[in-house]
Image (cartoon, rainbow, N blue to C red):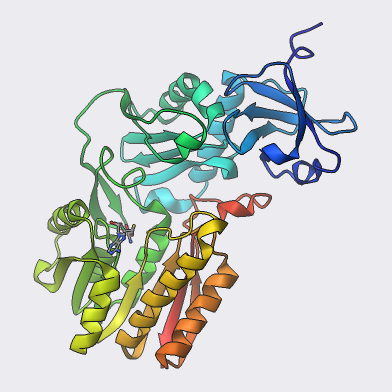
Length: 401
Ligand code: SAH
């Protein structure tokens, strides 16, 4: 018996091969009839239909509901260092073909399932890479992936941020720190459309910066001239500083995190802008919007970019209420002719549902409002067509008459 024939096998229940045939990369535990052999976390397993057809190879995650993540739909392929290097190279090639490099030196290089690398996130911040290994399969190949990343990108420093909660679902411990190179990169300076941001790769949220909003920050910048702007959930100041650069009359930026505001203030100082026109406020947006309403404050442009209220479908109801609440308040705070740039990065909230929530908020606010643009993630955050779950970021630009 050769090695491949001896590989462990996931045998699916009858009919449960359909999603795999459509190239959806997840094998749920409920779809599995039996497991042959004794695969350990991260091992490569052959996936077979009930009828015995070989559907491809997957990484085995014994503790997760997502028991298998498809590496390839070619059952005769070999999953090894060369296979992974090739996937990484494809992801890098796609980014190189985009004009993004002309505008920034910070980019998402690997976007998990949508780059054929389920559970791997890699962001580049100037010459530092930040990597997240979020699945048992990625954990298994960690060293090979790190070697290939250094070789392909020529970035010598790689900081690992495998401290995301999803690791616990995979039964993996949290881990963070430099794994290649070692340097003081706690504030890594990047440039985005001519603006400078200092990214805290060690302690910042996610990998340190929200690269997915890059194009939307630029759009907001273009819309800001002469406007009174309110940036809610401002984090390190991305939208607020962009609006200031776009000629906003005055900007107010709110976040509940003291650390985020501190970095945002540093970011403001790093740019040659009139800092007196941007005020940061450490506050809870839900409360502060009410305070602004009670004071009769008005704005011409409001950005709402909250954290994900509904990571999965289970939290949709509460999340919908929270989205409606802040959007209703924001619409009330808009002057006639004002704009609301409103976002959701919740996987559990579809673009359709999000639009319905905003419609409900406008109705209750008594606002005559219309959508004039739709927002999505920047091009370095591709969404594989067979993986709609990757389409998490949606946004609307709403005009209030
Ligand atoms: N717009 C930002 C990213 C926002 S991330 C950018 O483009 O970079 C979401 C932010 O919301 C985080 O900084 C978090 O600290 C903040 N946050 C979460 N809950 C909050 C609340 N209730 N009130 C104010 N800020 C909150």
